[in-house]
View 1 (cartoon, rainbow, N blue to C red):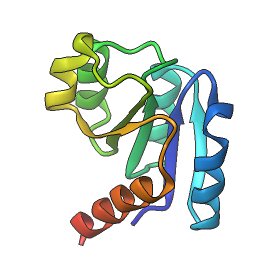
View 2 (cartoon, rainbow, N blue to C red; view 1 turned 90 degrees about the vertical axis):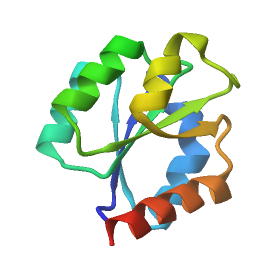
View 3 (cartoon, helix red, strand yellow; view 1 turned 90 degrees about the horizontal axis):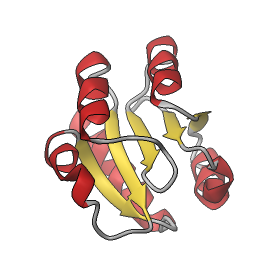
View 4 (cartoon, rainbow, N blue to C red; view 1 turned 180 degrees about the horizontal axis):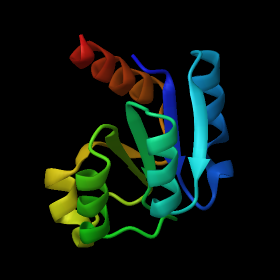
Length: 121
């Protein structure tokens, strides 16, 4: 599995524990604060997964669908403290691979990443 993950968040410090876990698992992390910055990073540094902080990132159904069309390779992992995002229902059905609850449970995150790795094989 490609060991690069990109976090889309305007408050990446919220993910220090998860980032530490990923680094311990030999993952490389990069951060972006906007979808345009994320797209540029994905083009420059191909990655297998992107974590999107739904609590801080400026995203909606249309922007996520557009991103997925233009940058189809990374799987999108949504992270939020809220249980439901009615405004993102369409993106959740069509663009987002998995949803994780904030704060991220390290075991759950590793299970998702192992699942992604297994699918690649």
